[in-house]
Length: 617
Image 1 (cartoon, rainbow, N blue to C red):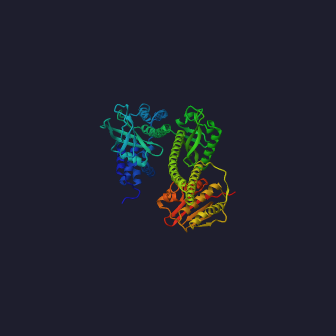
Image 2: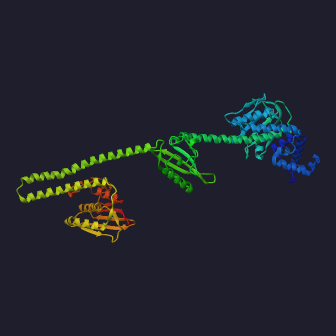
Image 3: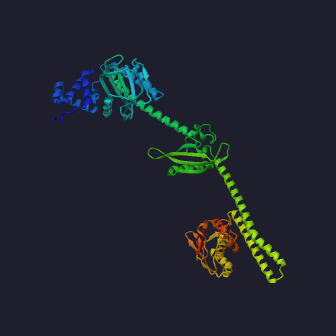
């Protein structure tokens, strides 16, 4: 077994070492490559030192250099210029070329000029640039040099598959700056081997990784490889890699910015970015026609709402934006007032969200506002049209129902009058007069209910007075007791001792309770029970009117609050119902800030529940 002091070269490494031993132009590099080969063959450090005529310490230094960076690391310390004056001249040319490349307008122009200046100012026979891709064994050629020594465009639409890439992947693995080949094949424009010579590739670094290579060879003049060639190419590669990285990132950023600008300017919305002081730092062209005193979006940069909006609006928006930037709470789809160039009031639908930096700190806001004035106007017109259509429909329904409901009592009155004129029996005359009286009362109730509905529909906020709901319930019960007694029905009261003040219209509330109790009497058979309960629940007064009546079918429950709806038309007509009583109940409850619900079981009875908010003095 070998001692731990020996090491084994990989196949590709061994090929590089053999190539350097036989073809490297520098004697020092050939010496060091020979030493590495001897260590690979199993020679001890002391034996290799004796053969190379150096100390074991130097051999160990060579071995460490090889393990760290391969052939280039092994040669780095010896590739010093033999002619300092020539090297300094080329180094000055390199500095000049690098400075000129910073003025390249595009990435492609940068690569093209890099080849031209490398040939004309740095003295290389041929140069070529290619970039790495994520696809193995594939590269993207850029600009290069033809067999005639002139620059040419070698770009292609798709990555090119290359063979013989072991050196490249070894350099990538070791992150080497250089790949040096001696007596390697040199190719023509069409890929045919036209000779042999040296080939050096300098890595293009973006600051963190290798992104490509700058390659040079001696196909045209067959000049031997010099130390200056290698060092200048290495420095040129490092400089070019940095410039390519910056230019690529700059173009990507510019492309992204132009795309963002195109999107912003093509939308119908006002888009803007503001800083922590609510100053505009970016906006789009749509914002200009809606802003006074500015001609372009650039004129808006640095302005605040105070520069082009009325003071009260600007102050309002400023306060809202400062609150957003303090709390991070966005403003979403809020309708906001505005003023156009002509001073007309307009409406915006606005969303504003916080703008955060990479550390998550709020540095401003991004806003989007859309002028919805025409939409609002259209919506208002549609609403007015819808309300008008609904009014006409209700009017038609009202006329139809009124004509039907008026027809029956008028017909009865007309018939009774006809008979009254021809009857001589006082008793029968009295019966007909009673019939006329009942029908007249029914007409009066119908007209009264219609007027009540009309008044409630046109309800404006009224001054509301404190109302004693318990007193109202007792008054209703007393007023309707005679009708209940006529059917041997019992009216039971369960009133809460103390309920907070209800503010409202006492007359309307009396009508609401009366309609519910009257409805219960009408649809409860003889000897039935009608109970009225009030209680305080949370911040509301709750009133329940229960009966043991005939009940309401489940499918009819959603309809009973509609105007002129009768669950049992024949029975309703018999009881003198107008079909408006429960509609009036619902209107009064809602106009007092409450609501009404109903539960019913056919054959068992019905319970109406009314909620009305309580208010304190």
